[in-house]
Length: 621
Image (cartoon, rainbow, N blue to C red; front, side):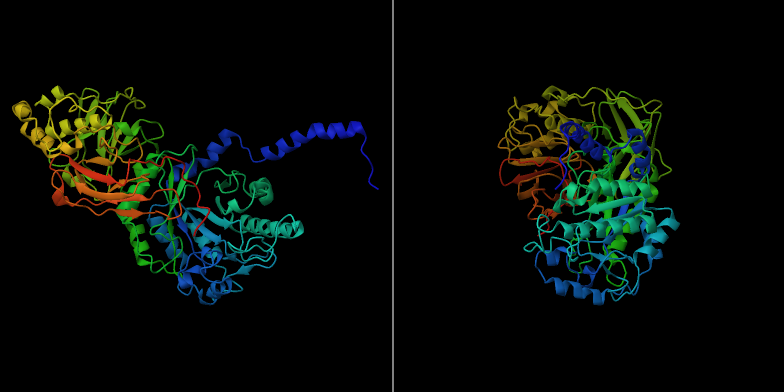
């Protein structure tokens, strides 16, 4: 019979219990200064390359999810081991290409949810490429060796679930092997198994970063997340861990959807595919263009985050041509614009510029990213800036940008020969950290439009910004939706402004405030019935313009004032997910207005926006 504790001892234990629990929770906490120091390389890096490589590349099926969702049986899925030969695997070439892309780190799958380990794990009852695949090799070690030789930081992806392991509880979406309540000893065997593998990874590969996945299947207590993190720090006190360890990690990992708003965490990384697949799938040809990928990187940079761009090698170890091309084109841009990428911090509010921005660490350099080419004599407009630049250079070019001030605004001209094919970057240098004017809503009235001393293009940009802010100078005029009604005012306006107004009257008639920040990088307005978005497009875009976070379906898109219909492209829309995809709108150059183009986007109902946090994908039907 067990001994009964004295009442005094029992009282003391009950008193200490909350403090013991608190101590266990605090094991994962770090001193803020120490964390900032260890995270600096990550925050400076801006670009990493993800590598999803496994047996799923043999048949080109969805990694692990294909058998989990019963698209094929587990037995047939695992037969791919026989075709996973890695016959043309050249880790040196992989790392050379990754470095050429401009990446500062790489993350490779050590094992996915299917449990197939790419290294010679000694944990109990594993499936490995050394013992079970046609390759008969440890495939992880040579890649990590080459990464470390190159100076790139090493990241290891590790799946917490192992749907193939006999001691893991979950098998497929419809089937479980056991419940933890019924078989706690069996679950503890699996915990020992995966903790052993993590210890092996720590000792053998000495990663700078561990990229966990699949934590949604169990609680942090069940995974023993605090213990995992504590053990990892024993091997490397400066280990960086992503957020997918039940909130025990260092940084957020939005997946596939570019965040509309800057994430709250100081450290974050968008993991992103080139097409719609993580692993190699030969029939997925929905690749984003290099231009789209470069602009996605810029989007992440402007919000102070990183882009972790994925490649999926084939079963023989070669990388698909489309992916190689994207990496090389990405490298062209990153090599040219290194100054405006690495070590930068989040930019200034979107209300100041119609493109993306970033700041140097000392806030004395402002980078303007223009993914459009200016028209002849057109000036870029930077609004509400107190500071006067001491210089304005075009990054990656020997040419300078000229600039002038008009009130609180700065105007810039970029020589046409200095325009980049994807994104042109202007670096504005200040003597002191940049100072911004207090944000104010542009309020242009109709009388202001009669100022013929202001260039037409600048006047129309100011008009677009006024409309975007909800101040419509035409509400008290006789302008009709078809452009009729301003004939008496014709001689008071410049011919260019008058013609533009009558051509684009639909976007001016009773329209109201445009999209809030994050959804579109330029000015916009909304029709009276809230069902048509009007997008104002400056210059000549280098690629399709983009809309983020629009929940509505698109009914029709056309060029205002001349009727051309445009077919949009939708990327990264997962049919079962509430997160909208990105709408890309390719505008024919022959249909661009010489001053300011307006695009009408007809929605299937009143405008409905997605502004929630974009997180990990926890289902994959």
